[in-house]
Structure formats: C-alpha cells, structure tokens
Image 1 (cartoon, one colour):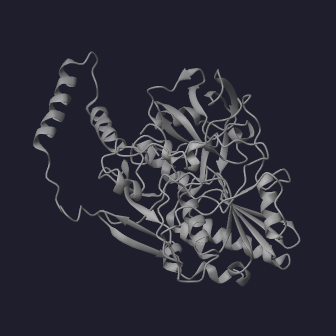
Image 2 (cartoon, rainbow, N blue to C red):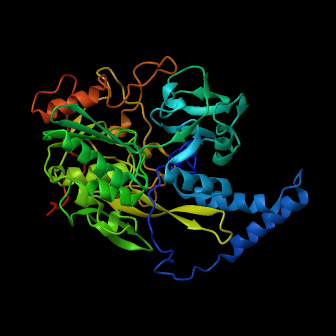
Image 3 (tube, rainbow, N blue to C red):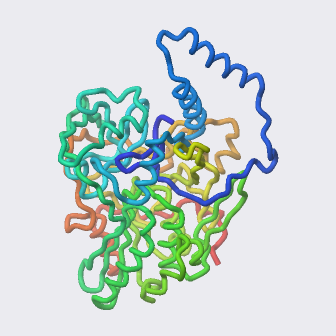
Length: 480
C-alpha cells in the first residue's frame, strides 16, 4: 500500500492499505489487445534464470518459492499498491476486511526491506504504546526483518493473546532506534464510533471502511439524532487508511442527495465507471436500502470532515466528494494522496492472489488527487505546535503520476515534489523524543476537533489556523 507505501493490513497490511479499495471488476484483458502475446525472448531469459539457479545456486531452492518470488517481483515492481498475496497474506487480507484479527493493532507496509507503520489502530497495544504512522520496524524480538516478506514479518508480530513481543523502531528525526515492548491482544476493529460532544453537536469517527461501515454509520447518526436536534456534525476520517469502495460511496451517500455522483474510476481495461449515491452501489448485495433508517437531518446538518496525512484512499473519496459538492468544510492537514484503485485476482489454486492497480479515481468535479491529496478548506495542524512529518503517496518510489503530470512528464517514473505542494513541507523542526502517547481522537484534548466545533458554531478559530483554498479546483467543472 514496492518499497515505500501502502500495502494493506491490519497488523498485516499485505504488500500494500494500503488501504485496499476493493472493486468487483470482472477480469478483462486490455481492450486494445484481448490476448497479450508473450515476449518470447524475455520468457526464454526467465527460463534460463530459473535453470541456472536450480543448477548452480549455492543452496537448493524450492521451485514454488522461485516462481512465487518471480510473480511477486513482477507485480510489486509496478507501483506501491500492486502485490502478490501468498496463502497467508491472502487469508489475512480477507480477515482484515471483515474487521477481526489477532496481534498488535498495526497497519503496515514494506519499505526498503523493512516494515513501515502506516497507522496504529486506536485502542490497540501499539496505539497505547505510542507507535506512530511512519515508524519503521527494523527488528522483532531482536531479529532483523530485513529480507523477510511482509507476510513473514506480520506472522512474527502476530501470536497468542497475552504473549509478549518487542519491536525495535526507527523514527525519522531520531539518531537511534528504540525498543517498544508490547503484549498481543485479540484485535476487533470497530470501524464506526460516535458520541454527543455537547447538546446539538455530534461526533462520528470512521477508522476504516469495512463490510459493516455503512449500516453502522446510519445507526450511529440515528442514535445521535435521538438525543436532541443536531446543530452540527463532525465526521472524523483522520488516520483512516481506506478500505472498501462501496463503503466510501455509502458514507458519502449518507450526506448527499440520492443519485449524486460520488466518484468515478477510469482504467485501461474497464474504462470509466460512475459510482453514485444509490443502494446498489453501497448495499453489498443486501436487500433494501440501509439509508431508510437514516434521519433526514443527515442531508442538511452543518458538517465538518476532519482529515490528515493518514487519511487515504476511501477516506479521500468521501472528503473529495463532500468538498466538491460544498456539502462539508474539510478541516485538518492534506491527505495522503492515493487516487488509484486495486482489485484482487484469485489464482486457480484458490489460496493465493494478486492485488493489481486497475484504475485511477476522480472526484465528482473531475479532480484527480493522485500524489497530491485533498487540501483542506481550513488547514489546522494536529496540535498548536505540531509539525506535519508524514510521508505521503508522492514520496513513494514508482507511485502513479497524477494525470496532469502524465501529460507533462510522459517518461517520468516518479515525479519530484514541487515546493508548492503540501507534501513538500514534511521535515520536522525538532527531534521527537521516542514514543509519545498520541492524543485520542474525539477527546477533550483533541485540538483539531475543538477547531471543528468552533467552525460549526460560526466562531473564530483559535490560532494557529490557516485558511486554504481547495486544491485542483481551477479547471474543474461545477457539480450539478
């Protein structure tokens, strides 16, 4: 989610999470070439390499390992989010989408041969210990992870609840790595939670887009509405790495008129596909419309969406749609910038699979936020003295270019950051002092949430807060 970002996992992220956006695309061949011709010379070279390893390599190597590694290298070399899923990785990805697994509560991805933390899950052992997004796990129980596959590393972090494990972490800006002792737990992901901040002002947090996210969101909003008339609502998507596309469409549909275009994708094989606020797009095959239980106030209540550099993929679809329709004010820091779509192709053995990038997605106004992210309407750092040090999509080797960059740099493999882009300002102004317990989102100490409530009340924001015009809107057509 490839050496630098976004492989999916929850305590496993699979060579990707990043954030998986799962689509039900039929596997179709390239429209220009229904049957791809195999390059004979390159296939012969592959066969020769296989034969030389089998005959001359210093140790005997299993045939299956060699071929699996060949597939893995071919797929992961495409972009940071395409990957080969071995049997363990495929199983753990499915478990992650369902929202329950054992381990430490980390979403991880490979980076330079090590394991990079995409995001710690709230309330889990890793979160409580102060592990942060961007941390690099270099050892597990004293053994280096260098050379391990992401699945092998995750397997070492998982284990029987109650057992101990120590992660050795390197953090950007620190001179030395440090150890973080942890105790494994059964991790049950609750993707939606809510509370009434004060009379009339509700708070809903979506931590990941899973199978139950849409009906759970409807239930939480209904519960808030029962506690009295809502004057304002905060939708918190910070550190939400994404998940299922239909979940993103459904969350957007809760606040937009029925039939509104939420997002569209465009890929070489599948062409353009529109996703609208319609039951068939978010109900996951269930009969009826879960939105029937949604209070009418959800469509009109003043809304703020909180985002940060950990908001990716499906989170960016929601914030982008609500921003385009001017349905919500986006507050926080620029998002991750992953505007590509992956789908999983199962291999005939029924055990392994590949996750392949098949399309780019665009907001209703036709914006691509690939490698750029959603720029908030009002930029507010996570605390008054915070410095945004997160890595983003634009920092990843082999990341897909934004379509505008593709047009201007057709030969570029990875565009450098422009000084004007929000991702460029990532260097910390001070060195962190090891693991620091994070501020709990939704708590009284949550600076960004406090600013969001002030905005909903029509009051001036406390300093520091910088207003920013939405990005990429200069040539976008108006949403009708």
